[in-house]
Length: 437
Image 1 (cartoon, rainbow, N blue to C red):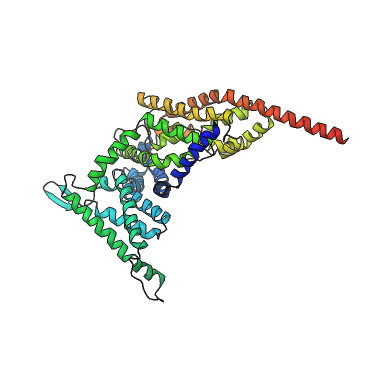
Image 2 (cartoon, rainbow, N blue to C red):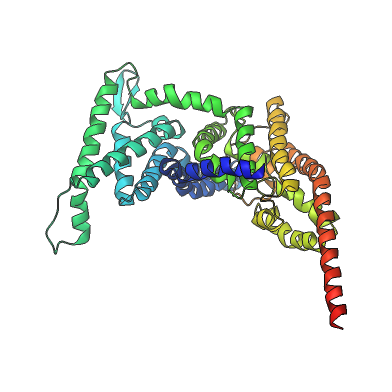
């Protein structure tokens, strides 16, 4: 059975993992993720979930203190669409063998060509760019622009539609002239696209992408079945030694990213938070200690197991596991191709996802604010910070305990197996020593 699953899943996972577009989307979002985490810290400080926090700092620093922190967070959150376009353009150009910085700049210019640059104020129209076009709602448009612009650029480069400079010209100058015709082709293309949309019923490319693609995908992705499938596939892939989230994020990451940014925008503006199934929901309320929710597994190993192999591994892995690092367990226990542990490893994250989805839907725990915490933030603390409520921590504690109960019989079964193997090895060593005597 395992071989059959491996024959089916391995080629599919490899194909998805090596797909240059999906890989570039993942790499592009990873480029801007550190910026989001750092600026999220400023947003969290400005809106820390403690009663009287705002009043205390207002009395100490004045009424404008929160604006100082908002200036930092808005520098990223209000421009995630254009930043995503630049980052994905960079990653896609690099993966396509182009000068990555040229690809990134071409993607940026193409995005700006399709961005409306006028705003109506009363009866007057003034030159300005609304953040709705360059922020979270522009992420999907940015994705399409990055891929298309870099492909057009590559099309021209591969056909040597470049201006060759004579020998002796500095490399920087030569490279700039090499990019002249490919860049011109991309700009001409998006110039024509801008005209076509301006005379259509959609008026802008933003309206077209948002209406036909982004809104439907957000609706599909923002559902319990979608997130259950995400965690199920990620866990199954881990069982076969494949980094599951690396594959599943290639498909789901753009959707979760947009939903997270929607929540963050609402939180920043003190509006009702719209979505349940965001990236913080996935990271903080479905898996604890890494894929498979292995923190529960580690606690069982550390507390009740008697085999030397499991106990020693538990001692080594418990501290990293608290901070979400579970490779020692995945490959050391192992979880990979282990039919005993595979069952709870798949079941626990899926069950956590289902329970969390119901709890958030019922309103027992506030929705995640959209603030991206460092992935090493331990449970209990992360539940409180992500929701601004102690109930988030209670939900995490409940699911960790539930995971312990589910893992327990399977880990004890494995423990007995390892005890038998250790006893047999010890008996064999004693027999060898006796024969030598």
